[in-house]
Length: 127
Image 1 (cartoon, rainbow, N blue to C red):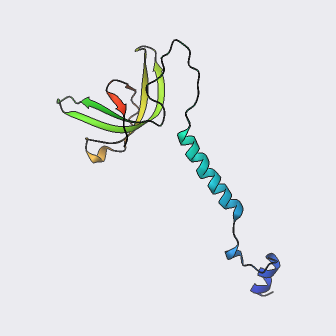
Image 2: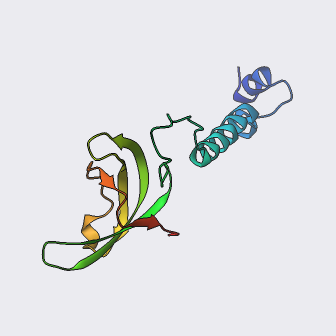
Image 3: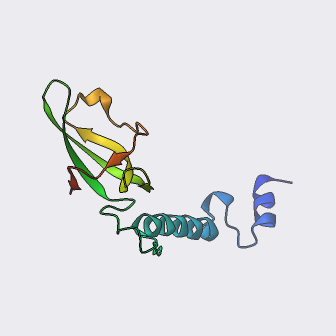
């Protein structure tokens, strides 16, 4: 059987497999991209017990943190909130932050140091 005969047997319209439009794959990719976008914009509506105040920041918020190092140098770091939890001993909300940029050396970023950060001098940032 020749190559052209084999192609026409598999594809009755005479189309080559190289020119077949994969609609299912395209729809799957579009759906995945849409869900990823919607998930990044999603803020869960969790009812907190009345004894807890509403957290100042939420997962996905872009924040800036101003702090002073041990040598007295004032620094600013920018990052994204990746976790929020209530700290029972300090009675405040604590945040896990993935740091993306700041006034430290460029080799330091991106950085996820796994340390809880209390609200303090943090503010929303539009980076």
